[in-house]
Image (cartoon, rainbow over all chains, first blue to last red):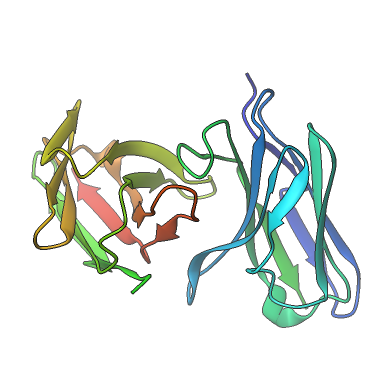
Length: 113
Length: 111
């Protein structure tokens, strides 16, 4: 299996622009997680899906952030409008065992100027 | 009560040494304690995990020691190698709830 696939790997954008991050989970995994990693706050869970349905989005920082999972093999995290404080590495992870044994993708490094 | 406190923040050891990374938690309902390893430019990868019904678990050169009464658990890396240089995260949760991650420990193993 190719593992969790994320794109793009790097994204540089200007404040106010829309940013879309993409994730393809491991085939057969029914849980998908979006995390944000910064030096100050560490790894933070933003939202997770089970069987394509959003279960807990309490970690989404504000309304500028939205996530969708239209099918079992694709999810997006969108930031609109982006702000410099959104600069971070965003990880997607998937699991077949709930919160346990999560497999992380390589991440998207987002820089908002 | 949901925090997982990890120490030290960084650690430097010589090849062959035994680095030890410690984590402490407060929520006694936690029942799953994994360690993740992250190399630069990569996502975290599950390394080893333990449940509170055992006090120690070994997988290769990696050992978790668990002290339920003290609410602490630690990662030991035997015969450390330069290739073990990475950031290590502890985490904890109870069934059906989100993993709470520690802030991470950056390990450097010098040759």
